[in-house]
Image (tube, rainbow, N blue to C red):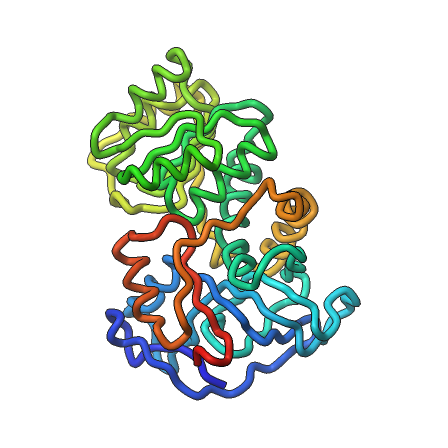
Length: 330
């Protein structure tokens, strides 16, 4: 089968399509004929990881496709079933294997490209909002990087599942417009305005209950100023740096803040299975109803993977970048 790996860790020029062996299917797994794969920042970071040793992995952690082998006790995943889900690398390929208990059966009204835009960003958003952020009905949430895949998913989930008030930040008017169309009550262009002041204005000085923070160090002071008492602040990225020159633990204590950090990709198979199950039960029906929608920026042919990585690394996307792996694109 054809698959994308790397010659060595480095830039996009190191991406390489190669012939690879068909993936094995162990007990409890399914094998999928891949139709589409999502592009994620973890893919570009893996590509650049100098700690990797040869043989280098097939990239990609998010796919949609058709079940061709079922080695599990899940009768609803019979041959021909349309599924999507998270894989442990191997997604940029014509075939991939994954644990059956992490498979999401694709709603009938969604295409393979739309389905591939769900697992990583919606599961990450659900995990951060509900398992870590403990978002409650009608609370207020501050969502940074609102034009990203996770950002667009989080806005929708917060509105549809919790009727939350959403304040969203981004650096481009197009991304802010999209955030508003998805349900954000207020939007902030961080290049022009201080979001902590907008938060104070929007909440009458109370602050927000939950923060989804992709940025890290450069937003530290403004995030702290934006927190209400007992707020939950979830770190899911360090786009603005990972080191803070100074911080006041006393301020964290006085506001009784919960500060949590997370990365979904390294989580255990069991964790991802439990997360997938809860998300599928609670949120998947809303895709059938049209209340939740995958947000897609572009669909790139399989042979043009370097272009997909370029769009991700240059932050061009509003929503997901999808790799199409239909036969004619290989």
